[in-house]
Amino acid sequence: MTRTTRSPRRRRSSSPGSSSPGPSTAPASLSSSPPSSSSTSASSPSWASAIPNPSAPPSASRASPGGHINPAVTFGLFLARKLSLTRAIFYIVMQCLGAICGAGVVKGFQKGLYMGNGGGANVVAPGYTKGDGLGAEIVGTFILVYTVFSATDAKRNARDSHVPILAPLPIGFAVFLVHLATIPITGTGINPARSLGAAIIYNRDHAWNDHWIFWVGPFIGAALAAIYHQVIIRAIPFKSRS
Image 1: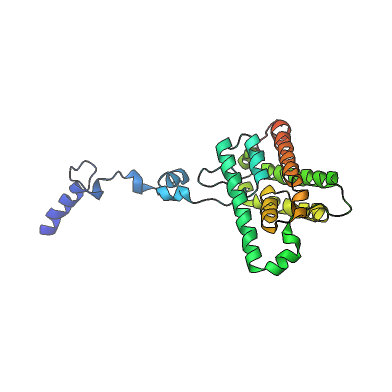
Image 2: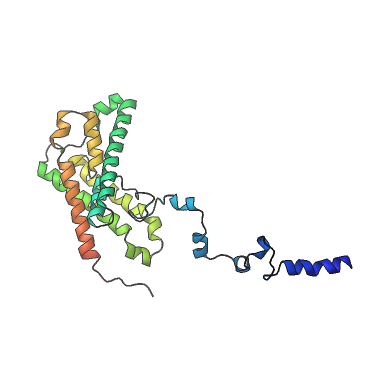
């Protein structure tokens, strides 16, 4: 008799209309079905949003810079209005400081090899003119920055869900091809921060003679890539797959 009289009381206390507080009064909808993807993301802890996504498009996340590591890429994204002037300046300053520190570390560990190989400073190779070097830097940076735009385009992300995950692959392949083509000409700059860091740590006259090429060329190439992508490519109507 005791068991039969207590069981109804337990049922009444666990019913939705019961006035007793505690976990038993939670709505049944929270446990009646598995959470959807939207509810899972909405209920994620606050610290989860601060985890950077290495494959996220530049400027797609405010928690991380998107892995620019190149003033030319940052400049191109700024021209495309994908990040603010303040943020662009901050990124470029940090990129240059990082390049200087990196070159200093290399010199500290392998000073003999470092000095023997010219400190890795970018110069126009013998047999090429300054115009050749400038053209190589413009074309090489155009290819790199345009690839960044294409690999992280929001239209392609909407159509192909795998694009954000694979974005580093075409970008890395573009860098590889540009190096193959421009190493014999300029040692491959296409990154003003990298050129600046090597020139400052090596600090020889010939490292500064053509240094302007490795700022003007990449910035022109980045500007052309931004204009081409925003004005021409983005103007093409988007057709979603049915």
